[in-house]
Image (cartoon, rainbow, N blue to C red; front, side, top):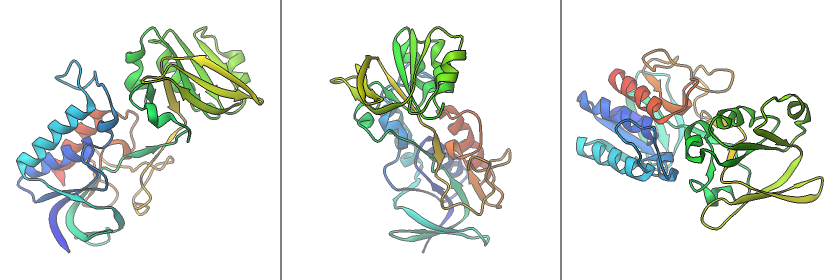
Amino acid sequence: MREFDVLVLGGGVGGMMSAIYAKRRGKNVAIVEEMMLGGVLWSIEKIENFPSYAEVSGATLAENFIKQIKHLGVVSISDEIVDVDFSAENKILVGKKESYTAKGVIIASGLSYNKLGSNEDDFLGRGVSYCAVCDANFYKDKDVAVASRKGSGIKGALDLVGVCKSVTILDSEDLSVYAKHTKNEKIKVISNVKDLKVTGKNLVEGVTFKVEGKEEKIKTSALFVELGKKPNTMLFKDLKLDENGYILTDEYMETSIKGVFAVGDIRAGKLKQLVCACSDGAIAGQNA
């Protein structure tokens, strides 16, 4: 069993920032990541709201973070954690390849977006987005569409409508009541949408779908997939979670179990942004 002072589960922004702060305190730190360090950054084409950059690609940001943690000597482990035991002072994490133990554990395993199950990922970062707040400004004064289920896309549409020329909500259920009462002329609602697919060459140019068996299509510069999301907390049922399954923490990012911390999108909080994950990570790394 490999021993560390601090183990970070997840190699996204929150996890890497946690590792940076813990390592700078002289701790023996490792990040355990199933895929690759950088997480969701690799799928983001352009970022305009990260400090010190007018504009930066997600890949560039990921590379800079990775250089920093390597320079500091943070250990990077490629493994999938399949079980945890937080009952003792020394926490145990069981991976598919090895087992690990540490007195401090920082959970940064993020969340998963509910998907259409169509071809949307072929256009990810090129017109398809899972975050209206993050990417609205890239489509200023353009026509965009929102994939919705039982009204899940309404909030995203409202985030977009102040920036975009028009927003079309494509809902898989009946949103006729909302359509009737919305007073925003820039929002259009199409209900009972099935088989929604993205069209275009290199970028999103439109979407096709069926309504009551009839094939339809509209032109759009972007499709925002707002079908909900779920935190990756399947392994952490012993921690206190909120009503939506997100991990509850105190101001030091510590969970209901001493020595276990949570940062970034997996933590209960209203705003899910890169800078928020960085802040969470700095606090957790300083206290783990």
